[in-house]
Image (tube, rainbow, N blue to C red):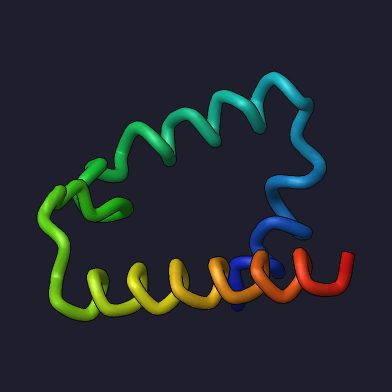
Length: 68
């Protein structure tokens, strides 16, 4: 049985208030660190990607100014 099957067969038929209660129970059971990486340090890859995106954006803006 897939998660979608479970949802369709058991969860979807519940009243909205019960589905909201279930959703809250599920979310409360998931530790925050398992979902989002709260590390504030940037890796070399992060820095490289940020730098490349900045250069691309600058070039896009410059090209747009030429076309105007």
